[in-house]
Image (cartoon, rainbow, N blue to C red; front, side):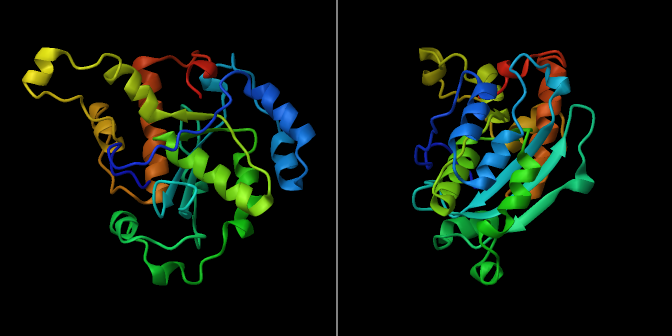
Length: 247
């Protein structure tokens, strides 16, 4: 994922459906005109009271040309299905894509995907049927949702004329609940203390998960899947309703 820290990221918070995703899917299936999106939403979404242990999950990660989905694009997508017991790494997928916008020097430095590598890469359109089929009916897991959902919505809207939203479990947000619950007090600021990092590598380290090379889409997707498994094991329960985790 392309994440240099909140101080450098342009605000891209999406307008998520925070109430009833099951009802939202029914409405979208009936209202949308694009066949691919109709098929996606027709698969439905499970009810919010479903225990997380019974939820089909898929971890996803995007590498992008920048932070703003309005004028930046998706360079790479990594995906891996999993549940609380295992990660189906043999079914992991990664796509290298030609974005609608030019690579920036900063993005190349971060994800190391160069102009020559994407010169013959396909457009997102060509993989959409396969990608949407892999996402349909599942709850996506990401680390820092201000990338994947708004970028995907913008990319879909640009190509199909209609956008899409879907529920996410954001492992960064779950860490923020614990480590950003209270602001630093006056004495902390005097002592120049800072909040602990909730970036992917730092969060994984707190759960004694092994370090991975960052900014590779499939690797980051697997890293996010492992992090969620650890978060559920240490701080939640297999019986936790998915509505307490998704957004």
